[in-house]
Every structure is written in C-alpha cells, then in structure tokens.
Length: 587
Image (cartoon, rainbow, N blue to C red; front, side):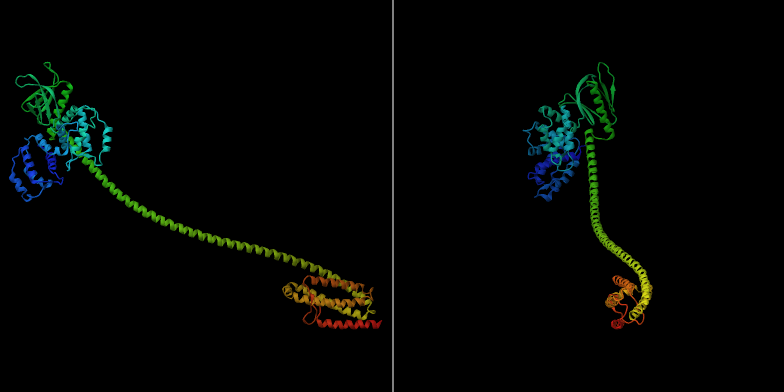
C-alpha cells in the first residue's frame, strides 16, 4: 500500500504549480481538471457530482490547499488501490509542475533524470509544507549517487557547500535538481554516468529495487539454464529477458514461508543457490561466489523484513533517520529548554549576584566610611593624647624646672643658714671680745664716765639684742614666712637704724679720738658689730634684732628693721649730745 504522505507530496507540487499568483489558492475549474486526472491515473471512478456538492458554497471564489484537502482525502486518497502505476501518477504531477519551476537546457541531466531527482526529493523530504529536503538527506542522496557512479565522496567539498547554504540548511526540489544538474559534486563525470547513477538510486529508493543483475535460472519444464535479468524487491524477485525491463518472464513471490539455501556445485555449474517457496522452488546460479553471497544475503533480508512486518530497507532506514533526527531535535529542544531555564536561573543568579555585589559595595562603602570615621576619630584621639602627652611632658619639664629651682633655692637657703650659723659663731666671738673690751673700758671709767655709762647701756642693749637674737634664731623656722612678708618694711627700718647708728658712730669716733689707746678694743668690737650688721642687711634681713619692751612700730632702714624705735633714737641722740657737750666742759 502506497503511503498517503508520499502521494500528497506530488499532489502538493501539482497544486502549487496551478497557483499562478502564488496566493495559495487555485480556481475550482483547475481543481476539477486536477481531480479528474488524479482519478484517471489512480484508476478511481470519477464522480463530478460529489465535487460539485463538496464545493457548492465556493462557486465564485478560489480554493486553498486546506480547502481542497478534505475532498482529496475523502473522494480520492481513501479509494486508492495498489493496482495503479505509481510512475504514471508521479509523471502526471511532474508534468503539471516542472515547466513552471525549472529548465533543464543548461543542466548536465535530461528531463527524465530531473524527474527521477524530483521523485527522490519527494521520498527524502520532510512531511512539513512547503516541502524541503534537509542537509542530512542531501548528503545521504549525494553519497548514494556518487557510490552508484563509482566516485569517491569528498567531505571537504560538502563542508564547503554547507557553508554556502542559507542558515536554514535545506533545499527545495528545484534547487536539488539544479545542484545535481550543475555537476558540483560530479565533476569529471560525463552525462551518461551521472544518468546511470541517478537511475540506480531512483530504482532503489522509488521503485524499491534492492538488487538487480544477470543470473542463470533453471527452467521448470525443460530443465535448461537460461540467462535472465533479475530484479529484487521487498516482496518479490522478478526476472526479465534483458535489463530494459520490457518483457517480464516471471515473478517469484516472497513471503514469510520462503527460504534461501546454498547448493553445492554440480553438472559443471557453480555458485548454485535455491529459493524455496510454499509450492515451488527455484534453482539459480550466480556468476561468482561473491555475487552469489550478495544475492543470498539480499533475499534473506527481504524475507526477514516480511517476517518482521517491515517495509523495504531504505524506507526503514529513512524512518530511522527521521526518528533519530526527531530524537535529536527533541533533545535539542530539551537542551534549549534546559539552557533557557539555566539562562533564566543564571540571569536570576546574576541579578542576585548583582544585588549582592551592590549590597557588598554599599556595605564596603559604609565600612570604608566607618573606617574613615574610626581612623579620623582614632587620629583625633591620638592627637588629643599627643597634645595631652606634650602638655604633661611640658608640665613635667616645668615641674622638673620648678623642682630644680626649689632645690636651688633650698640649697641657697641652706647655704644662708650655714652662713648665719657661721655669723652667729663669729658674733659670739665678737660679743666675747666686746665684753672683754667693756671690762677694759670699765677700768677707764673714771676718765670717760659718761661715755662708759653710755657704752654700758649699749652693752646691756646689745646683750638684750643678743638674747633676742637667740630667741629669734629659735623662732626663725617658724617665723620664716612672716619674715619674708615683713622683709621690705624691716629693710627700710634697718637702713634708717643704720643711718642713725652711723651718725652715732661718727659722734663716738670724735670721742674715741681722745682716748685712742683706751677705746681700741671697743672700736674693734664696734667695727665687728658694724660688719655683722652689714652682713645681716646684705642677706635680706634673714635676722633682725629684737628689742625688749613694748612692741612699738619698728624703724625700717635700708638694711632691714632697726634695733630701736624712733623715740629711743631721739632719747639717745639727746643723751649723746649732752655727754658731748659735757666732755669739753670737763676738759
């Protein structure tokens, strides 16, 4: 039974050829002619009434391929039987379409070869419309043709041709005919060789000729051996007088009960094999052992396919290739879907990564900002600490300087104390000398009574001052702060007292000139007392003479507080003046 898809492909070419304006629609009158021709070729009774009834609503308009398809399936293809000549059907469709689409004058092949290529295209093309043949089937067909011509296949040339094709990698029927007719893959071959190659592929793929060639067959009646041209198809082994196939002499039907057996050589005949059918057997001889083996294997393959309920090998191979392509296509689609999902997931991941990166950048920026703030704060703290350290260092240095200064002042104070102690010892010596001088002066009292009395009173005062100084020395430590505060005033009083004392000493000097020998020691004591007073004034009044009696305001001299008050000084001045005046009178 012919496959409906293979018949529809040829009818599609015819319908497309009738579409003059390329709008996908054909007039109803042209479809009537096409339907009549199809019924005639396929030996189907033509029913014009059914056609009119089917298209009664489309009397004025054009019909599309989709509109014509229901009628074609119902009234033509559903009634197809196996007794029609499929080559006449192909030639009728070819006649309708080839003149519109191609011209064979500039090609290396004839019109009959172009028709065979067209039939092969319909067999190998995909079941989708518009019809095209994909690159894998193109390669399969070209390999078959070159193998039939005995030429080698050039993979480099085919790869170069694939690069020249469009991105779809497919051809129409007319592009395939032009490719074969231009001899791109059959350079160096003549037209006859190319025609033979095309014819062999056509017989194999279209006419289901699996193998053909001359062999010797033994007759049933005369038992003679006659050379015949055998043609093997999936369900039969036909034999003809010669290879032009014009006169068929017989046909050996093949079924699941048939078998092939190899026979031993006998009667001078070699390469025997036997085909056993249900009711008859056929004895055949090949030209050599190789061909014998090839024929046996080919016939066994046909029987095996019949037992399996399969069609011809090349049809099964075509189905397997399509299934493989569909599987690959499904895998590619699945892979594309997976890739798409992966791409979506990847884009999602990329967005997440981008968001994470932005977040990380933001976090890094915040961290950098925080780090800058922390560093700035740390620098500020360090600066404050450095300033504090510098201030502490400066304070420490200042304290060290103050301590050094205090130490120096303490050393000076201790030195002054030592000097005072030394002066105190010298003062004691001076006082001792003064007492001795007073004792000497007592011996001369008669000569200078008034002066001795004054000196005695002075000595008493000095003794009081000495005792006061002793008491002052014991109170020096406690009164040191007070003495420092009163230093200025005492200095003024001391200077005043010194001035007065100097005046008295000048007056005393005049009196002592008369008694140089008697008052030498007294003068020395007075000089020592004067030296001591000078040192006391020089050392800023660290010591002062304390007079007994009431604590009236003291007189301040240039050397510190005076030893007596202003009143006492006036009294002494008057007393000294009286004594001075009495002295000359007594002489």
